[in-house]
Image (cartoon, rainbow, N blue to C red; front, side, top):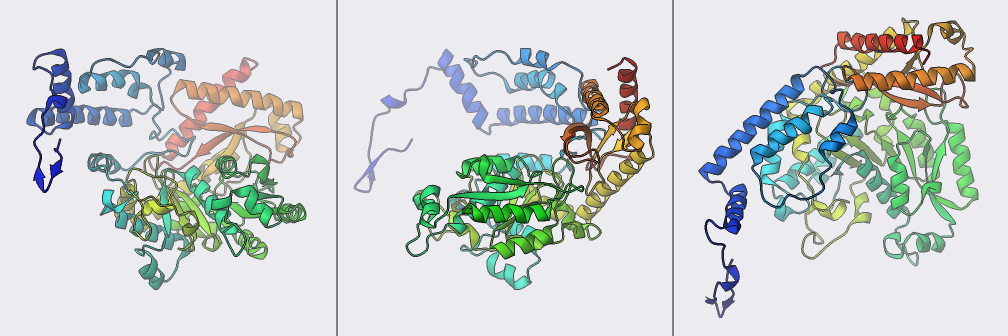
Length: 554
């Protein structure tokens, strides 16, 4: 600890306030143990290598295990984590690793398993593991140049690369804006939820920015800003398939759940344009400010993609910020064969893409991209001690303050995997979806509930007595309720077994009409390790389980 200086000279002070515990005393042992966790002595480095070797061994054993999970009951895991007292003394790191090896790692879900095809989580490229260690070790904080001098320019570079993928501006645009302190092409986020919130935050503040005698919402608050403009309220409009993160966003932004106007979808799970126009007209009549229109590029339930070009036309006609939630489907932009599915996304004002979905990066990697480099100025915040006006600090225009430098993962993936690599991964995932859809169509035991628009499929098993009526579209409500119960049990049994896995959802958009909620098995074919053999194994286990349940009268 440095002593105070007076007149340019270092003052002499006593060290009574820094008395150290006696060597060999209990307090001395704690001090020695703690300092050993932070220093880089030879002994500490040797222990670190032991721990790293054991952790690496656990990770490899876990990844090589073909099972999706163990069949342990959750109640037993709860029992192992029921002690709520903080340990009083420091313990050995090696002991801790062995503890979590048996109680935590052993029963974790193997999302990298090629037979785990139920959620938007997949195998990761090996390079994220050593890079994750490096990112943690150097502990950079991209909120400010003073805490991330080299990472901040890299983050700007990555945002420009992803911006170009989406919006396809000319080279001179990126020459001007990529590293300009006054421009924001995008921001790293923790995921799609934060990205969607930031997009709507920008849209709200832009719609209610201060002009003349009209107050800015960021200063006066939402009620006063709306009242000054003659509005009775505010709203965001999207389909009833929009992600639940938009409910969080409307809550945080003061609009409330009632301000999230949900429009019906058509038979293809895409927003109904006629209903959309009716909704926008009602908002006008009710004096509601619609500050954002949301299009979805890959719904979480079925992978459907809204007609983005049509939505862009309507947003332009009504003068509304157009946001595209492409958290799932954004990666299709890497594929020349499938990019057309997202036609119109380049006309959006803001776009969400999740790195931890089809860019195959760890959890916590999301991005928001902004077409207009000036848009984020409406959410800018400053602080004298950390993010100052006119600086290159990225934290001026982000929701997060201190945050990990996860941009390293995106930068590495774009450089190591490249466009052709991502194109291969996207095309493979789409091809596996077509394979699974064809397999379901050719199997009378299963029913495909919706034609896949990306690589998410909804289907279900049909008991033998109902297959004929299902083929004619003549299932009754009682029939569907029976199949729903069977589907729920089937998915639960499959999950508990831990050999294979698909998720389940409830859809109201099938040939049986919107009044009938159909419980569906939901498969996601994004894992590059999944083969046709794995897909066959997933369906085969479902057949076996369903037939047993059906025979038992379930």
